[in-house]
Length: 480
Ligand code: NDP
Image (cartoon, rainbow, N blue to C red; front, side, top):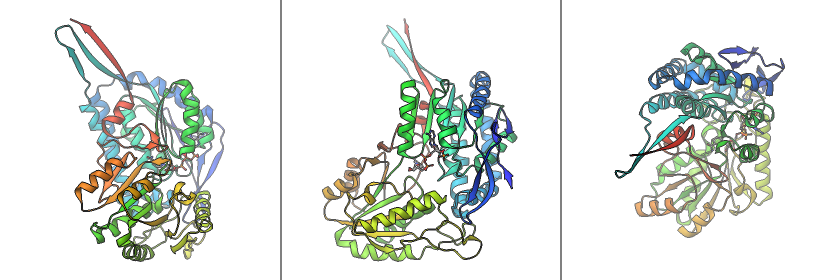
């Protein structure tokens, strides 16, 4: 079985402790590789390597930085099949989803910022004939990037790409639940000729490696994607050190379905928004609010499509719902289904673990689950479950659905289905979230600002927002 290595100073290294954590294939429940159990000593080495690489990387002409990153993007594209297979085995997602969605998106992340940086300009503010202000944007220095297990390479590269393009050197930690594609990515960086120390990947546990990155006094910016509780802990440590922080946190996203929607398309898109990647996407809609006049019709059609989703071996082409990423998360999701029943919910579809015959018989599978009969303020409808579980509830008026949709501590994304243009704009304006999709879900343009409000996060990723985050701004005022 393979040992995964850290990537520090351009080399693939064992952790200083020589200790490893079992890496489990969630579809079979079996250990299939070992992830370094690194600690603050590995983070210190990674920092030293990054600090040594910083002067030359930050001073390298943008066109040359861009060229190296484009080579990385090209190698991701060439190795899509290998990366997709690794991601599917490591995370439990269907192979076709990794191949057509996640890995191409990781390639796009690198490609997008490799080219964006060549167009990243700053502003000038002339004061008539008296003076001229101009803005300088310079790389921050050594930055920390910490990412979760649900879209491993996709979210990892979404942070690393703008950080590197802007001229920073990076100490990064992927989730220890899904380390494999970040490891393959480190090999790609070596093959692409990324200078040593520019990117350092330290594998291991959040409370050891993640917290050591956050607490390191010379790592002055942290870009984090993960749970709200972890985000709060990171802010608690980083804020008194005055680190720059970007926090992309949890969600409990509403899907609002008006009676005047395009019915067939709405049912199909709602199923996709609910259960893609086993519902383990921060943007998945988990609270479905349906206008009462079409509630029964929608419910019947929705449940029928959900019940037909094939659960199974992630490597099979016809699998629509793969394995839950880990046993811990599997138990958590099942506990929420029990909670929903205790809170008076009725299970319309699914509601339990699913046994896949054959090599996946010990895997962590859960039936896509639809629950009705819950009030919008109960825990099931307020807390993030982050799995294949949705609730469905009728509403009578726009005001009522807005009140229900806005009732959680989260504010990441919202999906609205209506053919009435005015209503769509009106509702979009009143939803308290960072992202609103009208008649679609997860349609992404990498130039747009991405992030949440309330406890879904602080700051925005994507496009210029990301490049601004990863640079320091200085105003120079010249008296004429
Ligand atoms: P966690 O918050 O548990 O972990 C995220 C990352 O932080 C992991 O690499 C983890 O390591 C690390 N970590 C854990 N504790 C600390 C710490 N004290 N200091 C520094 N780093 C730490 O989230 P999950 O991995 O469980 O991911 C699921 C969550 O991510 C959900 O809440 C989901 O909504 C959110 N998410 C948000 C997105 C967004 O864009 N807003 C996108 C995708 C997911 P380890 O794995 O070893 O614990």
